[in-house]
Length: 371
Image (cartoon, rainbow, N blue to C red; front, side, top):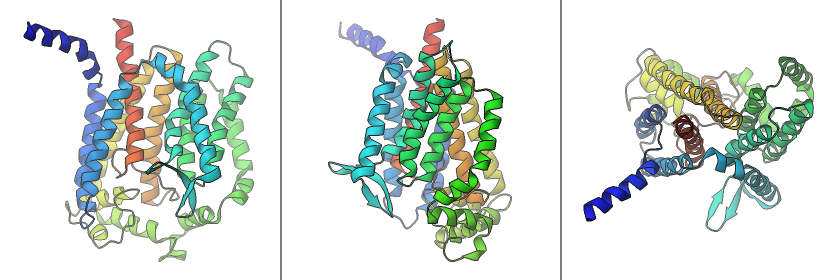
């Protein structure tokens, strides 16, 4: 009787433990494995990093599992309150947030500091996907204008902190939803022209450190020991790796502490120096597989809402990887964007895990609908 009861309990609980999408989980695990290998080398002499990252990975997978068990219908129901709560937290940050390194990005709650802008990377496209789903079949230019306002509110609050890197990711995810909702190419061209015409205005409202980052990108040698130090040292590390790299734990730039933030934003420089061009190609293939799987899930999604949401999550992964690699390679300004599933950090990894859980939920419920 007890054996029968155990089997019956397992049958009831089994669906909750088989929510992980096989291909997506395998790709993420491979990226995390590469991350731990690189982080071990990058964190030599920095105690506690490996242990903390392993804990972060377990938390991220727990969040992924939790979200994968939530149906897309439930996500639609929580989209509006989640967005409203997120904006409320951003307003709280603007009013009485904690200042660190000259930026007001954190909110002190109890014994921890949280960064609400990180979760707006997921909440904003979730809200936009709900909005377009609610108007599916009768979208007009007013619909896109309202969507632009919904996107501009959190982006404006994040830029004010200031946090240009996070704002860029929120814009990319939100704009992906607007584009996939059917924005005309003529409108895209018009936005591009308007954006180009507004560059002088944008330049005038940038903070001094943001202007310096752009000027440093153009010529980092103007301040080689100051603002240009990050780019110069990271490009030296990437180039010195050659074809096959210097070997694991044998990177000189990292271990001689020439690479700043070598466990977080600039971990790609450590990886490139030690594993070279061959290692970079393998890493890029993994990211292409990750993005390809996300697009496949988006293409097979059962309705408008899930298609938009899956596409936005995939765009987040793409933007993370593209901006970070471009930043470390010296072709984009330094904006503080981590490399997805590679960089050390808890909040960003939880956000990425949340996105993975959303993709798995969409894939899982597509199968349930078909059967």
